[in-house]
Structures are given as structure tokens and as C-alpha cells.
Image 1 (tube, rainbow, N blue to C red):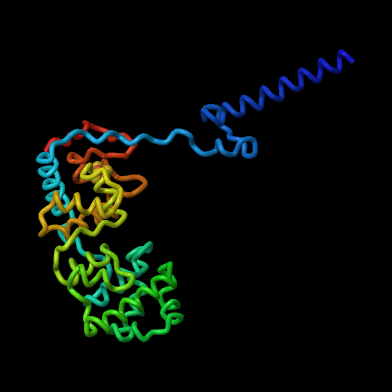
Image 2: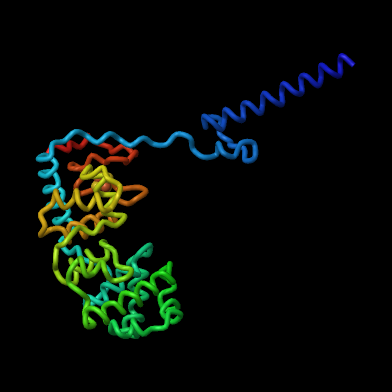
Length: 282
Ligand code: SF4
């Protein structure tokens, strides 16, 4: 009886010892294997990378650095432009609505056929929701997008005599058109620098470059507008978007080859940059 209890005691000690070690393995990640089922919650990495502190910089120094960043990007991407194919304001408006949560490449594939079938605001205003949904399905969120396009073109027909309006106030009154879409249309179809388009690339790069600490697109836009001359607002977003697509990738930015690395504090980028530490002094 005593012998049986002793064996059981040893078994229990070994079992719970191993279980505890397993827990430590998962917690600290140094013992390798992570056992699914024991404590699945621990499979989530516990240590989140810390954002680097934003270096202290005066307003004037930041403005000078922003100017140099723009000069660097302008030199790198002299042909930067809106990558949504279009020939007139209506086509750009439709393409921009379709581009939400979708790549420009996919939108261009869809609009290649769509724009041949629907040529005027009246065509969209009178379109069947189902038919339009089918035509734009591969861009995602197709029900909402189809509804936005129809509503917006009905408003263009009823309130603007079939012409896409040329002001921010009027554009954002059309259904399904927000400030970002309005900025795209105003800047690229009408040549009006009314604001800065803040998409995912512009937001990410502005933060990494230490131009803003904001995360809300509307606030990022306001900060960028203060930093950059109005004449460059439209191009600023193109330069940042082009750099975001070709160099400053979301996951693994190619900092080593980056043309403006000497001006970038690399906020939030954790991979070390080989070579001498860049200075952000303007
Ligand atoms: S240095 Fe790196 S983080 Fe900074 S802009 Fe260039 S690629 Fe992006």
C-alpha cells in the first residue's frame, strides 16, 4: 500500500513537473515546442515589439527635413502618378470608389470592361444593382460599392446636371464619397490641391518617417498639410504611395536600399539597419 502510494506520488511529481516545464517553454519561447491544447493562449507571442521613441525635433527642423524627403522622393519617382486608369473625372470617381480595400491592379482589370459598358453618370444611375454587383464583384465589398456608385451618380444627375462636381463640399455630399475619394478626384482629375490623400501607404510612411504620430487619417492629413506646400499636396501622396509600393513595404521595408534612409528615423521598424546610424538632423 505504502509502495503504491510512493509510486503514484513519483508519477504525479513527474507529470506536473513536465507540465510546468511545458508552460515555461511556451512562456519564454527558449525551449522550442509550443504545445497546442495545454495552454493555447500562450501560442500568441507575448512580447510585442516596442515602438521606438520619436526623436525630439523642432517644427522648423521637421519642415526642413520634410522638404528634403520630398526632394528625395521626387528625384526617385519623377514619373509618379495616379495608378488608377481613367480618362475623365467620372471614370476616376468610379475607380476610386472601387479601390477601397482592393489593389489598383485589380481595379484596372475591372474598369477595363466596366467603363466601356457604363459611359455616363446616367448609365450608372439607371443601372440594375445586381448587374453592377456582378461587374465589380472581384473588387470586394461589391454590394456596398455598387450601391455607392448608383447613389452617387443619381445625385450627380439630379443636383449637378450630369457633371462630377469640382469642390470638396459638393463631392462629399454625393453618397459613398468621403474626403479621401474627393481628394483623389480633385487632385488628379481637376488639378485642385484641396488636401492630401491618406491611404494605408501614406499613413504608414508618414509615421515611419516621423512626420506624424497620429493614426487617424484625418489628423495625419492635417499634419501633412501643415508641413508641405499646398502645390505639392497631390504629388506628396503619389510619392509616398510609390515609395510604399516599391521600397517601404508594410512588412519588410527595404531600408538598406532606401533612397531617403538618411532622413528617416524608421519609427516602428525593428530590423537593424547595417552601417552607420542615419541622422535625422535636417
Ligand atoms: S528608411 Fe526604411 S522605413 Fe524609412 S522610408 Fe526608407 S524604407 Fe521606409
